[in-house]
Length: 283
Image (cartoon, rainbow, N blue to C red):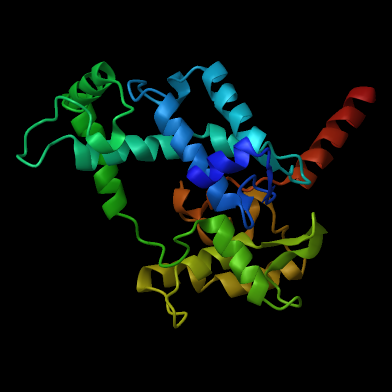
């Protein structure tokens, strides 16, 4: 963070691009998210039960501080960049780390004070946090989440830098004539930004270096090529909740693993619906 502090003192501002899902990409995206994580961990108390309980004024203040150093280019489809920061994933991961690694000291005793690594945590807040982690309600919720994680049939094998950055890495090596490149490459502030279909990104993140997938993943990938052919022939629109990937999961009531960090949104379909409603009202 010393690098960021020096840049701030010198009045330097870094340009950061976002894809159409509102996810940061490009050279300075990792610096920005690292800085966002540091200020969220330091200034948002861990005593809040969940992210929704954190006052919006506090979130907005931190986001304004972020934009002093990082200039965010809005996605062309109007997706709110604030959503990327307001979902609270970094803050929740921070609390999970404290719970998993720092509740107990080297002697397997509960820590009465925050670990020295996080000396910015208020001692009173720390004790309240530890107490909240010892309740039966939290234990039940933790066990449920742990069981849900073990039931993941389609674990990711790639993309440790995140879906958005992994997608951009694929764009650099994917030919322009690829069926999976959904948006033509376009210039934005001197850098190339593109988007790959959800289904190809999903497959790539769950294949190994030799492009092999697990048997459970094949249950989803096997019908995909045929679905892509149907979409190209106009049998259905490969957008929104009815895209190829979602149809591959059609036997699942809830396919949370089908999402890629942010829910796919079909703005063109929404605009058509709005136009139809306006026409109906006028008549």
